[in-house]
Image (tube, rainbow, N blue to C red):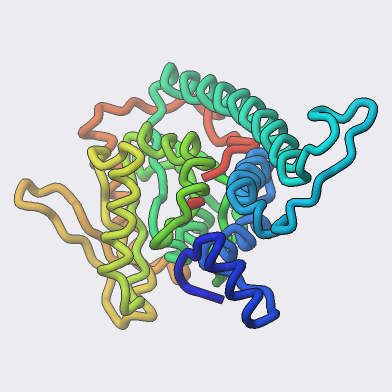
Length: 309
């Protein structure tokens, strides 16, 4: 296993030299994504990323380039190489996947327009993988999103209503976590979903404050947000796992008096009152009106997010 990307030739030569299966960082991340995807869209996006990667590496499986005999109904006729047949089949499947994903994107856009017409404030949880986003989502919304101490526990975006202290409601969405050097194929496959983040009114950037690599993780998340066009979306830094970091809950404000950083523990609930207050203040700044009872809270069935990455 290599913690970096290998070219097809490097991977083939190493396997020939060592007579063992060789995998790189992208292979591992794609395998994890394939195991974690639960929704229809998530599975389609992972399959698309895997097929596009496989298409560029077919020579590894068919280095002998044996000629195939043509027959009735076989496109290409006598002498077509097996690699050409495989590439054609992969290309056909890729087109099918992209068409199905386009339909799902249109459905999500329709739901988003419906929320906009209601004037619903949308808030998305973003952050590095395993930062505690799903645990925070469940604690705030009393939801049942899958949360575990593992990479990419969440691939499928879930939205729920969150009632603020003053009775107003916002739509809170849990999204896929980011990671450094996210494979390009995954970024492209999940781009439509990642761009949903750019349409949010507010981002809660959840950080594992107990991680020794938190500064690098913050930088990586900010880089991905910039890549998907979400760099200008208002963001609150939510420093999670303070119970493990030995820090007290608290709120930090910018020179204008606005909350821009909070210290919380999603697991114990410490500091969550400050987070709810921050959301209420943001809603005030946007002039958000009380939502109609029962108008929010339906999950985005099939929506996926890294992502993710």
